[in-house]
Image 1 (tube, helix red, strand yellow):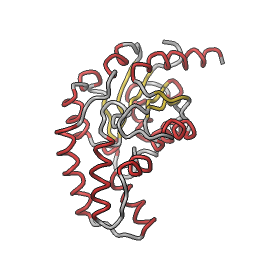
Image 2: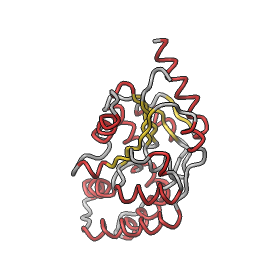
Image 3: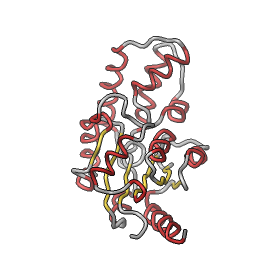
Image 4: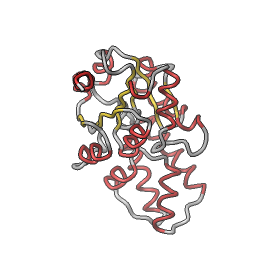
Length: 229
């Protein structure tokens, strides 16, 4: 396929329907800690961010100090929920089978959590061993910084300008654009909200899709448009 040599997938909210589970766990914990917030607002404002960065942002906004125990409690509760409830996004296997270019995953989630989720839903064989976590790069390297996308492209031996990224979060789109990559927004997970597609395109995604089955055609269209230009 001319135009792109690599497609990078975010994981949470793109390959697995996990963002809604995270929003449920985290909104409950924040409300209990004195920062009332609903599941929809949680997803809209913080999807794609690490729990640590969410807590730091709320501390700055509301001057509510959060203990390290809250950080650990969320990670434990979320792992339990994900292990029990996480499901694959419909159409991933179809889409991947029709994309004749290199592929990998670049995520803010830990390697351990990525392995657990992808194994549970049966998608790990489609991507292993090319599954990269920002946590493995060191502290403060998560999206919206571009580091994990640049790392993934480097590991795959592809220049950033030959990469297209599939992202469901504004923070992820910002990270991919900062890495010099083109972006397709995805709004087909359960945490999606009415203005989701508009927010992704406003952040820099060239288009947004709500069905993974549409991905191969959109990638081909973007590649063809690039060739025309």
